[in-house]
Length: 529
Ligand SMILES: Cc1ncc(C[n+]2csc(CCOP(=O)(O)OP(=O)(O)O)c2C)c(N)n1
Ligand code: SF4
Image (cartoon, rainbow, N blue to C red):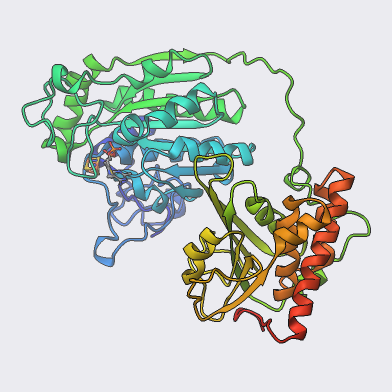
């Protein structure tokens, strides 16, 4: 569909009226279509096109062929009008290329079909939280959180309150139609007293369902927000005010001034059971007395800046910046003989189970692999059971959860019994013990018993059993280079005497497996070439 075609986004009547305030249409009866006198911009019915669709909208709204001529919104729906006002504001302010639009769950879930900007669609109520993350990581972008009243004032109450309280430099457009539209008309926090809905069939009663929530007023009690206004789509005059408020909110974000919020009272003719004209009147006569239009906040918040921690690159924080003389990661990446390896490391809290997983992913990162580490532990700080799932992969990891590990590192008998049956066929188990428990019926996978605790004890610290197991794992699977393990240990273990024990523990674990190999006990899991 060409950009200048007059597709209606929302209420055609509203559009026509907005249009007429901009410039009256001119009938060009005497001039041929597309003639130079007509500026070459003449529609098929002989009218000059003076108000075309904003280029912030996609040329084509991707819909089923039979619905291609219309948007998915009902006739008279306020969402379409709000979309139009936002698109025109972004266009006029030159912000299209910088904008990221976070759409909610609700009737406007498909906003990304219309806005030709960056689009993210998030779970119900989470838009301000997602927008926070996006804005903080891309501070030069214009981030819009667009939400209905069920989304913002019910399931997402916490998100909006805390985003506003933190003064996130985002813009929130809150479309309040007093009802859950998409799901068929359940009561929303903004449903009016006496208003019927499918979940308040006798009308909302404050004694039972509480009073309507005034989100603009509520947020205006907070210190941080810069701009809060309530507007309405009740008539042309108020739509023009809404237009100005939407622009202002975006300008505030553009200028880095703080959190901006516009609540828009909006008709939902379908659920209200009214025609578009009656629905707009209902906004004026019924909604506005409960939700008075007002600018509740318009000032630059003074947020004291204190001892801000210095902003450091993520690689620095994680201490994964390659050091001079470190191994060449690009070469390492190609050296791995597997596509992905899944590990489960399990034992008691205090055995260094989670730490072992962290050391392995640190090594994986240094070798240019994709990694994930998913810990799981009980409420006890020590001696409760703990395990972690570790993935090392050449490609992006779909899920950090490991249900069928290629290798199980079982640091105690309990973990052996609990997880042995989950090991993938062709996988292996490394067990911290001189031998398997007598009554243990081992599954048909490779099992290697390593007296890691004893070995570590002899080296000077039973705590180094996890590092003995690490050495055994590296020797058994060759999934990561022992040299990388040493460099990680050198960086992480600050006490020199412990580092010395860990070095020996690593070597002892490797040696143990090496010696086993000579007696023919060791093989590699299936994931390896
Ligand atoms: C976590 C979760 N809970 C509930 C739903 C069901 N749900 C989808 S849309 C919606 C209400 C939408 O109402 P509102 O935010 O007012 O937007 P409108 O449709 O009126 O524009 C609900 C409850 C969901 N999708 N996800
Ligand atoms: S149900 Fe209401 S909010 Fe949803 S598209 Fe229709 S008019 Fe709009």
